[in-house]
Image (tube, rainbow, N blue to C red):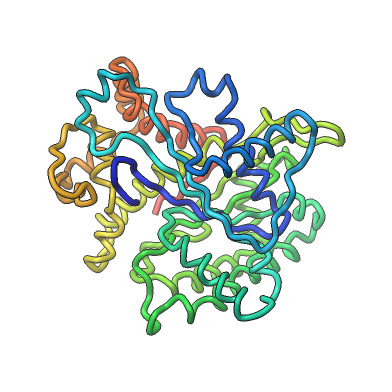
Length: 383
């Protein structure tokens, strides 16, 4: 987490070529620009780069109006930044004592080709390293499992799954020497790696438990090996979750002559996963695990600010905002983590009543994660 007047969260998306990354990103952004979304939402989603926003919106409109699938990009690592700007009125801004006013989501799209094909030469090899290095600050990583490929290998899903996980494992190993200076493990590294079923609409009988069970049954050993490789990159590898969280994602419902963009699965969880899953998990790890001080500080970076907003706690704002975590008592963070169930709903309702859209949005995000589990499209690790 990076903190200024916007709390910045990074999410890294990994998937083989054709697994649906471009369609998913376009569907995520395009839906936030629809009139219905703008009317009911407490915030605006604004692309920091106007060109990126126009391109993604055009992709979405092409799907919605012309059943045109976006052109797949190859060997192009791209990061997209979106500001989540609250609709609070002038009075709310004038009396604002919150540590931040907005959220920012940075979405890193890492080319699947680089996990499947050999690089063409030193220049491309360096671009691959630089691209991976740019996403090291991500809080959450999504590893996409292509629903179409599962269908293509029905009854022998292990052939696809083992190949997928081996490609990622070997791709990471090929980067390791370039990423670890003097072989020292990294403190700043994605620590939550979710397994995500893309194109979930093609498997309508799948809930998140069936998806989890398929992975464990067909490729459980490969998941363990992938975790071992990722653990080799990170300091305090106990504070790491790989293949323990699962989510179903579908960008739209596709047919021969129509793409129904309103029939989506799981994309409404992207913002809640990026904003709130690291808060819950990192705070728990820092409390229950014996980790080096610099790792604990990294895990807790930004959690104090989030806790203050969730609990509507007024804070003083002198000095660097990035050090706000040191101004918020640990018991405040713990109280925010324990804000669940009826108390969470009550806090959300109170925030809505006083037009505190930031607190309402963040508590709403936590409620969205709970709802995702109730609908069996999300499964969170309890570790």
